[in-house]
Image: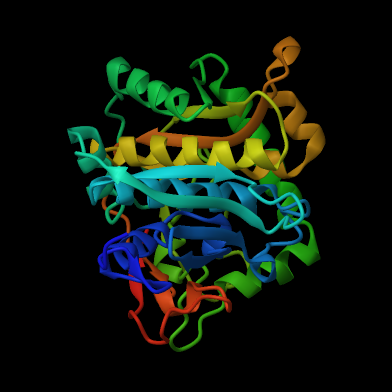
Length: 340
């Protein structure tokens, strides 16, 4: 491996750029639940269980999906820098927190799709604001479906006739959370402002209150009633899609995260905004209503898709904070960033 990737166990500037891209992935409550362990041949990607959002994600499913999204960003960044990522999921059965190992493989010429996806990493945002009524072209939706399929996922665009039922399901789950004091405590942890905070969801990313509630986005301002937010009319018939996998274990969650991120980045390339609306998936009996029936598909994410205004960035921890304690990376390698 040349010095751009690493030398004597220390990552070089190309690896640093790839890890920064990985750290820009979306995660539940912007918890950024990943750690990276660079080594002479590549990098190990680990779960950071201290950042698990325990109440809504007791089994770590959403944490693992978040790590899968970071893995996808890392793969795309490596390809964009001219090397083939060689991926192994769950490479060491005795180390459950070691979720992926990516070796730096042979040189490769990045194609246009890779270059577009890599550039989209810094521009992808979670948008909790109203979208326009401009329809999403069918061929663009087909492209998002194909993006999920490339990563072993299945994206099903919700039929407009079934849309109100899915919206009602999301609203039911949101109402249950609002009535749970333990949820308020957990939400406060991830929305509390403090100087220099580099994780969680800041007030500028909460979005307005939807009135009427045609789009029941998660209310991150729930525990801060004194902070008046404007109300806004959201679209009457949101475009929704459900991401499925064929099974429902950690390997499938990692694949779901990669499929999800490819979909989100492809949407960004096409000028679309996206919102994750996964509240029903936090309740087994509600999640079952979204599953794929006889073929055993399991719902992993619900995505709202449309054309919306530019959404503000959220903070990100500096790369030095994302490195596993076993890494030989020198402290202070990079500063904090802000992405969606």
